[in-house]
Length: 235
Ligand SMILES: [Zn+2]
Image (cartoon, rainbow, N blue to C red; front, top):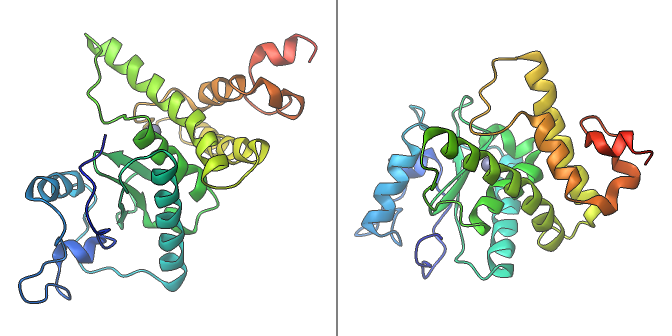
């Protein structure tokens, strides 16, 4: 699970926060509430996300960040977990979203994307499921399979989070995650060398996800990448 709960929610950390040019009042840094260990972990985790220069968010992006924070707070409370901060990456090549022990990050491009809620719910699902625990696979192959299994679990948990913390009904929540995975599927068709970063091919993830919600089969059976057995068994 994440770090011990901070007394006060830390401020949103963007790239500019880490450089800290406009904060840092006397005796206080922008990390005020972070322990040294957490700070070090954050900096390590962020090494790949940083771009040189000071980047600020547009009002629409700021609004989106506030919504993501509120959603993350609701999720943490519903699952009785410490609040988890979100970091915004300004590197267009960093992933749409990612989860590390103690925080999750979303790409600035994700903030105004129609896939935002699916991406955020998926990363929060990794948090809820405790996926910062080390993988136990004995060999590389087992390790890979376990990672892929975690991604499948996170997709399904994202649907639950979208219903519980996002107030969607199950059908809309499932469609939200489905549409995102379908977008990845189409992207993979266009760019076959796309790095799947520990995921199974998106079409397989979709089949797995939909298969976990047999009660939604009525409308979902006809979808691209729906479980093969749904389409062949006269449903
Ligand atoms: Zn994931």
